[in-house]
Image 1: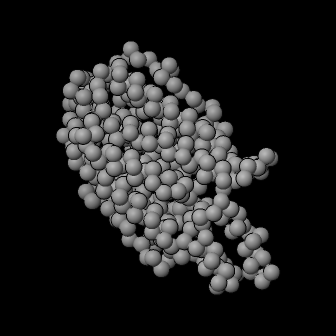
Image 2: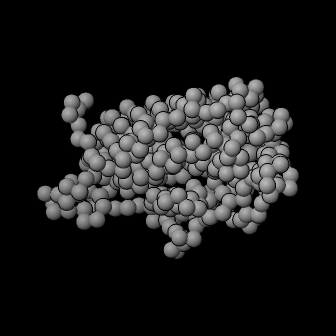
Image 3: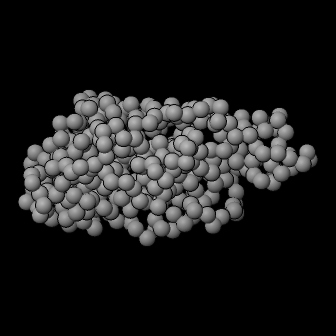
Length: 346
């Protein structure tokens, strides 16, 4: 049922909404006549390895449109407002990247050549709003790694400037997903948590298959696709522990190689400067980075530790609430007031 005058909380989602409204770049804000930073063959390789990211922007735009009514029915007003800015962000990214392909005279990889991309698109769109937000976090962690490499290696090139602009939006998207899941996960039952883990496994498997097919293109640009995927997996694992989806590892939070909420991160092997730039020994040369195998700790969780019974509630009430989560007022039922009433036996 619609609320004529819903409650609007001053929370992190409203803050992110206001921040988003201050940065609304479109394709009209870029100098498309500037240097591309790539020769013809490099541009073809870039067009190919950009394909999964480009598809991810479209999938995120469609997914947000589907998730918005779910946030409405859950009476998450500030989240609804944030999602309107998210939709605008993804629409702008899609338009900017489409213009980039057009200006470069290149095309993304065809689906018949790489059907894994269609699997990726459909997997991101399965499930409810919690699945979607988890998929957004996983997808945006990958996109951020990709954009960061080009923003730092080719800052004056057209795609380097695009990457720098998109990274500003991606940081908000990751913050939204992180905070939303951290708030919701204590109220999801064990089956739902396992479902999120399976989604992570599926997306990693698909991206690994895509990386193998784009290996030669990545190498031409001086990128190690496997290293990027390994770093992406490490970032996913870090966030999974931070939001409570997986148990934390013996106080290792500060030493994890993945991305931090404050934006800091351990070094990632990056693109060398473009050919002809100061310090370059050749086009797309890679510099030293993490040791081989770093960040490959996958899915090491204990199902017994995933259950989070509500403190102070009776065993039957706690069990019932943990199994709940499908109705529109699931989170409302688990507020402090309701939990307190259960604990007092009222």
